[in-house]
Length: 327
Image (cartoon, rainbow, N blue to C red; front, top):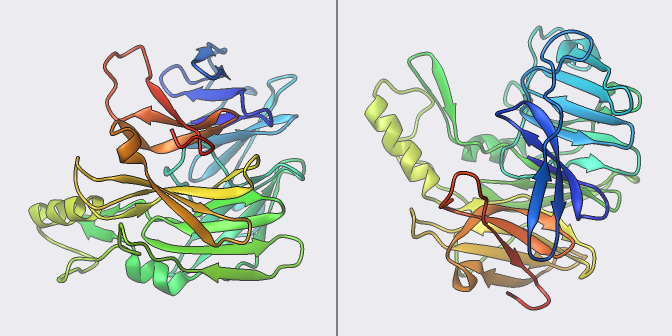
C-alpha cells in the first residue's frame, strides 16, 4: 500500500512484514524505498492490524475493518477508537467498514479538508461514511448508492459457517470536490458533488469486455459443497473486473484499469474519460506490455504498474504507461 504526496514523486509505503511505514521515492526510470521505524503494536504508540492507511500533513491514519489508529506525525503518539465509539452505527456492537483491496492507494481522501470516505455494508444496504481526521469524528454522507444492483451482482456465499466474498465492494475516489464511486463487478460510475449534494450516474459499454459480471446460473447464498464453491470462485475471478478511478491532472482525464475475461490470458485495458465522464478512449495495455498487473500507482511520470510475476524476491519490477506517448 502506497500513499504519495502532492508531488506524486515521493510518499510512504506500508511494510506489512516489518509493520513499519517506509519512505518511497520515484523517478522517471526507477523507484526505491527507505526503511522506517518498526511500529509498536501496544501502548501509547501502538498500532494494531493495518488493512489500509493514508496520511495528512499532521497525522497518519491506520485502519482495519473495526478500528482506526490516528498517529501524530511529529510525536508518533497514537490514539485509537473502535468504530462503535464514533456514534454513527446505532446500537450495533461490532460494525465493520468495507476496506477495498482493489487499489495500491487509498484514493477516497479529500485532501482539501482531510476527510476520508469509506463504504459501510449492513443489512442489504451500502452507504458512505465520512471520517474527519482533524476532528477524529465520523458522519453519514447522503449518497444514493445503487444498493439493489450491488447486492444482486456481488459474489457472497456461506460455506461451513464461513462467508466467502468476491471483493466487490464499491471503490471511492475524491477529485476536485467530487466523490467518484465505481464498482468492481459492473461498469457504472456515480459522481457525487461534495459541495451541492447533487449526483449523476454513468453507464458504459465496451466492445472489448462485458459491462458486468454474471453469477452462476444455480447461484445461491449458501452451499454444502466446497468443490462447487471453488468452481464458482474460479469462474467469478475469471470474469471482467473494473478498477478504481484515478485522475491525471496534466491531461484533465479520468482513467481506470479493466481486467477482461479469462485466466492468465486475460487482457488488461485502460478506459479514459474526459472531465465530463464521457468515454474518449480504451487502450489495450496488454498490447503495450503483457507483463502488467491489474493495479497501478498514479505518479508524476505516468501510471506505474507492477509486473505480474516478480523474478527476484528483493526486486519489484515496474512499468510506466504514459498516455501522452501511449507507451
